[in-house]
Image 1 (spheres, rainbow, N blue to C red):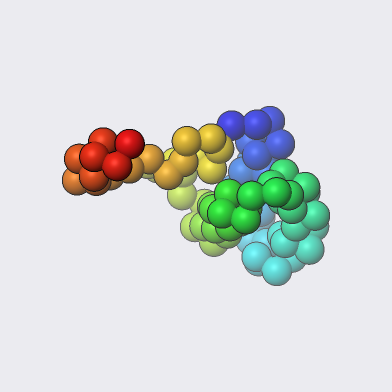
Image 2 (spheres, one colour):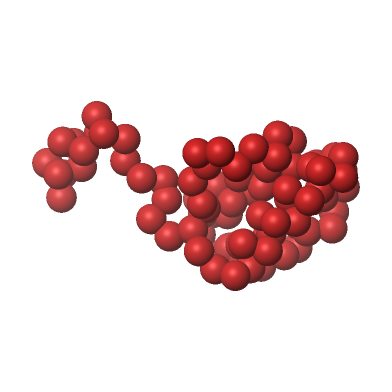
Length: 85
């Protein structure tokens, strides 16, 4: 996970603690999120959803980072992943 993504995640949790709503967070950090994932739409969407979840809930328990290799396949999907590889 890049340092930029970590900083964005920290900012999202801080926004939650401060009671900042998502639209205000996005106005401030949206350009940074776009710059962090300018070429991969799926990764941009996952990062945006992750930050939205952090701003709304502030919950880091069991959350996966938005960086490389995410999302990981679920245990019941592993046979399918191996069969198609």
